[in-house]
Length: 187
Image 1 (cartoon, rainbow, N blue to C red):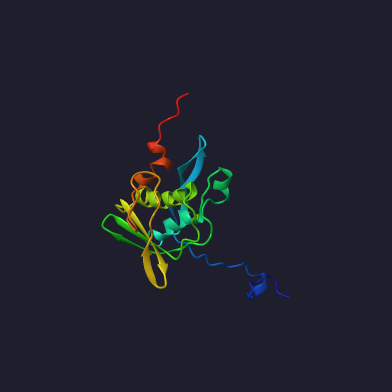
Image 2: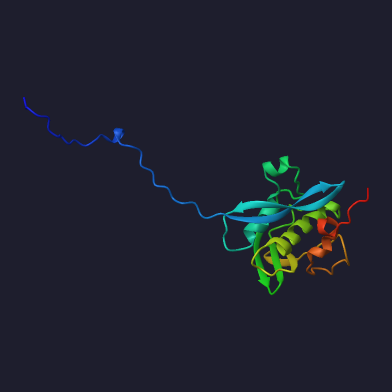
């Protein structure tokens, strides 16, 4: 028997060791604005929403948010989108102030010449020209892949002259949906 206690070192069994975790920092998210739609005075209008994205250095990630439509919180706030699943952005190219958007198909767009069809294009075009920060985009041209080729789309517009086959469009071609162009209702 010893007269004084002494230190005894023994390894602690693994089961009793505290959990050690290595946290990998998530990539920095970035806040961006996109256009969805909302009913205002019985008319569909473009409405800005803010989204957190994982930036990849391209505008594709931002434009994909438009195609995705409203999240649950936005749906509860009555934001809508005419897009359905079926279209994906496969690339973009910026030539001066013209943004070309390359889609795999038009399956996610309304397939008729309706207000919903024009609203879908308005959301995509106006997000590109009005809300993407850091790029001077004025015009948008949409091309769809068919048999390995990119074919220009005749983009329907709601305002102004009808575009020529495959011609680029401005956000102003969708003034019907843009609140900044609306005259307040007299009451």
